[in-house]
Image (cartoon, rainbow, N blue to C red; front, top):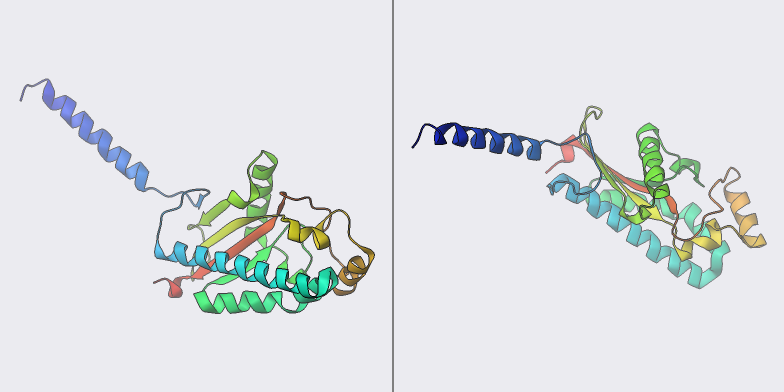
Length: 204
């Protein structure tokens, strides 16, 4: 090997090592393509299960009793569905929004920060349902991972969350949720987010 080739090979090896280090580094919040690990997969599965379970139950209740009945369903049954999903997956899971209906779904500090970030991305043109965030660093003791996923306003949501609410539905909302701020949405807008939190002890 020539004396000229040796420095070039050493420089190439250094560059490859640096690239590998950067590729393996993880930022505290990754929005987009997260590493496929078991904890993240569990959080994503729980969020998907919650969304599908709530959507199916809500559509069934709307078909059976209309929007007024759906308000009662959300008040009485949605928390129980979230609890059942949490138990199935071993992950705390729920919904939250900046403009929420139930005080039980009000965001805490970390959720509010992500909601504000999601709102900024949505305002810049991002589709709400594509918004993702995974937090792995700076977590409280005992928490291994936090995950969030945007919720888009769907047509099924508009009877209770849209700009035009029928009088009987509005009365049911006022009776169940006197501090409601979750109306005035349009189809496709960011409605809020699903969140999941995995305990360190639960990590596979």
